[in-house]
Image 1 (tube, rainbow, N blue to C red):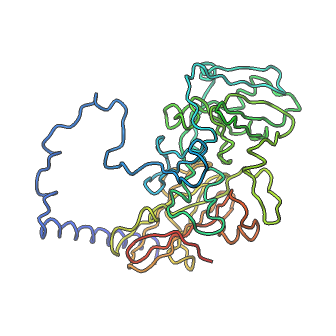
Image 2 (tube, rainbow, N blue to C red):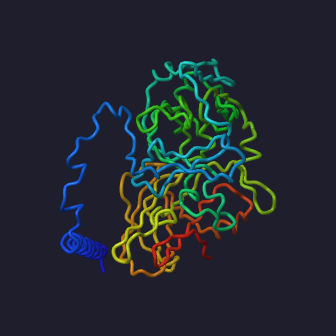
Image 3 (cartoon, rainbow, N blue to C red):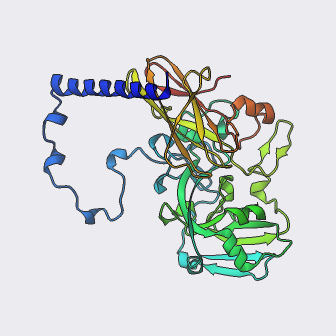
Length: 416
């Protein structure tokens, strides 16, 4: 059967089912929600002055970031996860972007903010926010993923919800100045091969970045999704390092030092390295490889109907390019089907996919497998472990499995 005919039959079945249900409710049950006027039809709503900054409907109160209290030692050095199961499309609303802090949120007047460029440069410079805003700016859409995303899953299924297994990620449009523009203003000496980015928060976060990446696609960003960065995202200024681990996207960016070699500071030696089975650690594993997850259905988003037309939805991303294809299985990998990609396809950005099928009410084992534009295919967890063991807590991009029972309830599981 052709994909076109299969799609047409699915749509016809869906229309038949939905039409039958609507007719049954309206005629047999005389549903007052459709046959009678309601209070909201007869009373005037709130005026424009009552909501100067738009907020979600109170009926969406559960759409929020969530933390796992036992995961870290203290809230000021912790994580708040994006509710992926509540979102669609590819853009993450600013108020739902995951948070990762090492010393809490630094909040201060942007007029006090300064960005210094020093080290192996022709002239050391200090920029105010007003100075930075005068440079030509660009708009780009990128995902930001913590290297520890899915880290708890290395040794087996742990957290029951895609918000917790995969929610250390968000995808927004950044507005900012190309980092190379600021570096060119300072002038890089011939032996300047690396830079050290430093944040203004209490943790004194620093990361070494090779000059090739700095001059390629890095941004010094001051806006996200059109408005100023949120405080928890580094207001008023952050570094954007597309496709590379989120710890390198220094928030509250205050200094860039140019040097001739990497610094090997704390967050790139004691942490954010991948510990192998033999005790050695992988060095400089910056790029986030192709990954995907089915967000609906999932443990926090069960199937609410019994049998019939069903839609699987999910997101995929790669730090090396775009995602032209995602495969989906509902039987644990025995049979794979190509998902339907929907929405824009940007470099190093999230991609949305869907898979429509007719559920017969039996148990399901759902998985997704991303292919990126370099030809890389998302591996299974066992394939990753065969090379790297189970000691790491970083860079786990293995295929995720949800088991869905006959009642539509989903659970985090792992299959060989």
